[in-house]
Amino acid sequence: MTVQKLVIVGEKQLKGETSVSGGKNSSLAIIPAALLADGPCTIENVPDIQDIHVFETILRSLGAEVSYQPAERLMVIDPRTVSSCTVSYDLARQLRASYYFMGALLGRLGEANVPLPGGCDIGARPIDQHRKAFTALGTQVSDTGGALALKGNPVGTRINFDLVTVGGTINAMLAAVRAKGNTVLSNAAREPHVVDVANFLNSIGARVRGAGTDTIRIEGRGHLRGGIYTVIPDQIETGTLMIAAAATRGDVVIRDTIPTHMEALTAKLLEMGVKVTTDDDVIRVQFGDIHRNLQISTQEYPGFPTDLQQPISALLTRAKGTSVVTENIFSNRFKHLQEMERMGALVRISGNVATIEGVTQLRGAQVSASDLRCGAALVIAGLMARGTTEVDHVEYIDRGYEQLEEKLNALGADITRTTVEE
Ligand code: UD1
Image (cartoon, rainbow, N blue to C red; front, side):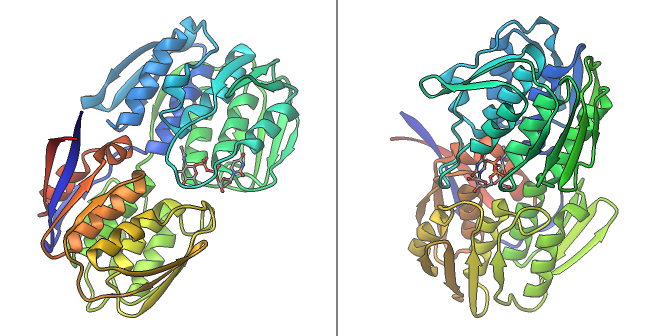
């Protein structure tokens, strides 16, 4: 079997301009949401990443007509031919976001059979809140050998989430937009991609109000038309590029961003001593004179995103002083730091808290990515380290970052992709 590695020669400063691709998590919710339309939907700014290719296959397997042009970042979905309500296990297990086919198929057909999702191994990822929402909407929910079987047209209701869940909020929205009657979601997630999905749904005739606050009100509509919609820039890719610029003590201008989505990270980089300036859709990150230690505690939006915890804690391994990183969203999200110990990082992990003693230098080593953001963190570690770092299991990175090494190389990094026999 052949596998791919990234070989990174470290200590190259990143300099110049780059731009951010369309949002992964937005696209992975908006594409299933297009199944709710009664006409073709054209989705622009869809990133060319592996997870999107899996979704294309799922859409076709359901009977939708799909034209995906990765080079144009364009996907056209005509859901009028959808005839199946069943997603295969082999496809669903490849990624977390396959759970959105539950809400979308339920909203369209009143029925869905979707295997429990796969995705990154970053700790327990139950979907009890999704089930709670479907049940509240009057749907029969049963487990059938590792899959969820949903039956019954949704009827509007009130749903109070027991915890803040991005996936649960979006799934409830998808199931409710065509429901009979009105739905109110309380304790809803406020992430930018929740708002993006609501904006897409509204653009095709839905009535979703309050997305971006913790209360979302949905007036059920029997009919949704097709339309054209442009996905927002990827918040996590933006943050990864910002952190990479800071980590290499570089000077990078990042275009096609939404700076307000980045406020939690920007505040922390400023606190570290990094210079961050913004103008319209542009963010510039420049090295100051020192990288100070930080206290980071992940939270739901608008707090510090868990998906950027791994990249920023890689950066903190070289900050001056002791940093403390508390991961509040997922239980197993420090594997990158354990890998970085091979590179000379000094880390103590106790439960959901990582204590990082900054070192003056990291050295290149062979390390292994075990999930998507772990991969991104290890690339940042390789950019900082003296010598050569080899990051294997690149497939995790390819799931969610569009041309990460190309973008970094264009800024002055030295990263090559090699294929080896395993
Ligand atoms: C989504 C993102 C992921 C991000 C995460 C948090 C996608 C495809 N993935 O994942 O990149 O890291 O939001 O911002 O958009 N929980 C339950 N029961 C549930 C649902 C969630 O206990 O039914 C818990 C989870 O275990 C976790 C927390 O709630 O501890 C947040 O999870 P959630 O917001 O649902 O994350 P995902 O939708 O899986």
